Structure formats: structure tokens, C-alpha cells
View (cartoon, rainbow, N blue to C red):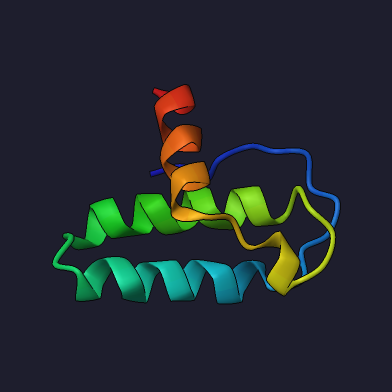
Length: 70
């Protein structure tokens, strides 16, 4: 799976966002590939925003991002 291409403005907390979403998805029973795709989308969104905690996307934003990439 390739990473999503976005125009990054601040990479602060991208890894934290990825790891948090991956862990959450796995805890909810998603498979690794599906969880990694969702985590990658969340991290991609987060780097398009300034800051750390304020850059983390909502679950709805991640879902919309993925729908728009299909």
C-alpha cells in the first residue's frame, strides 16, 4: 500500500496520529491492512494542518478522505 500524497505543512504528531488510529482500529477488530489504511489516511490529514493535537482528524474526516481517494 502506498502512502497518500498530500501537501504537508507540519509533520508534528503524524506518527502519534498513525499509531493511535492503528491501535484503535485493531482494538475494534479491523484487520491489519484495513487498519493501516485508515491510520495512513489520518496521518496524511494531520500533516496538512498546523499543530499536534489540533491537527488530529475526526473519524468522519478520515472516512470522507478515504471515500474521496477511491
